Image (tube, rainbow, N blue to C red; front, side, top):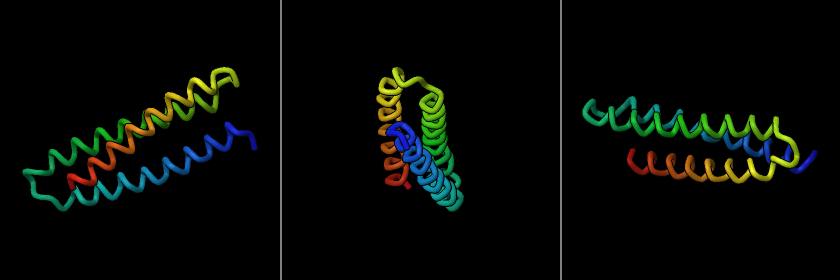
Length: 94
């Protein structure tokens, strides 16, 4: 397995973890008072958008040439960091 394949595989597993985190956040949001529900939903929307961004970037990695791979990896890692922060922030608010 190539270095890129290993990296993409790692991303796919991490996306599965993030999807589980999002599901947990959604479950928590279902049990909050109505006046807080909108705020929780807004946070979840942000997290979903960032997750979707990483999915797109992962597909770009899969389809990229060897030359473009290193550049795309930097963008994926930046998006990964943003998503991790957003999930952590949402968990702390909930």
